[in-house]
Length: 280
Image (tube, rainbow, N blue to C red; front, side):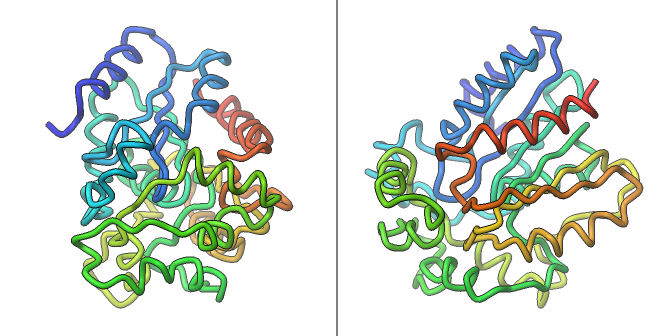
């Protein structure tokens, strides 16, 4: 059992509600609290929501910044198993919505037949994806170049955040997001994604041909430097071979911050329409 008391309480509340559950999965450099606006919206629309953190995530942004090494060493398989534990405790298969590495994890869970519906937003590349634009390498450099990457969390500088996350925003809005949401992160998942195509045991492998995968929506920010549109399009070409409904939405003029910036509602409404279409 790796779920915290608060995560177990969220599972119990979702089960007691009798409503379709929606599980939100955050990625690197954010906490689960980054989904608050989305959770409010989906709850208003009649869903029960829960947003587990990654194992050992601090409770608040301030606590996370005070202890950056709390994030060190987290790996894709470990984090996926944590979310699978939460899903297995639900009374029905949930909608799963993930961003960045959370989008990769959401697809891994779908490949394991855990999800009823899946939405992957700017999802990190899985094994088999070959698109690697220069912008993605530059955005990943703070983690890829970090020595002793399994022992320390990585904090982005403002300049690194501005390039990888808020490049489509004004400096004023970008700095506000950096102060409100940015936390350190494990660099290990980035190494795992970067080396996956050379590793037969890669933890970023996604089972894309599972006929019980269910409906999948991939969303890309057209101006994202961290997970460029070309990466998401590559994932879509692989996933659309599945018998399940597979759709791709491109949100123009949006970067990697698209789930937390002032335009989040456009992205959430795109996801919500897909969920309404496919969730019972």
